Length: 146
Image 1 (cartoon, rainbow, N blue to C red):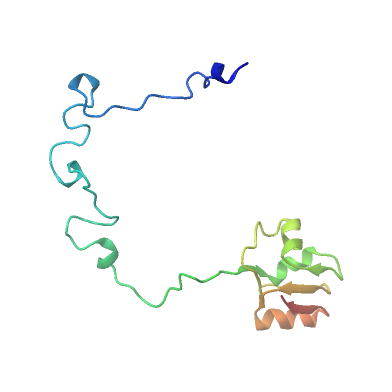
Image 2: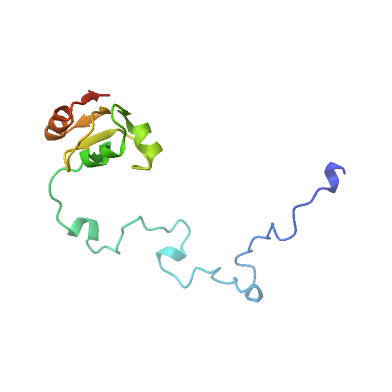
């Protein structure tokens, strides 16, 4: 086999549509752009959210409060799910993923206090709620901020 003998698999390539090349092509005259109007002109585009001069929806709806676009949301788990681990285990994000409790932990883990803990565990997380910290320590475990 030579380099000159290579060809793409049948059906993997298509010839591009030649717009504006006669009415027999089905894409002649206006070349699929319709008649006149902004979108028929060269360079004629409307920006995202533009509503023809009407006040856009994004500006009509009231905004309240502050939204931090740079926030890195923590993955939250409750104290109750920690009972799935053996006594004396070290619990961190990797251990939770391994057990199938969470699917991913991009920015860090936060432990919340819903439920009760009966086992003595060492829990490593980015953040703990005050009551979750108390519950872990009452059960004889330790909390470590990573």
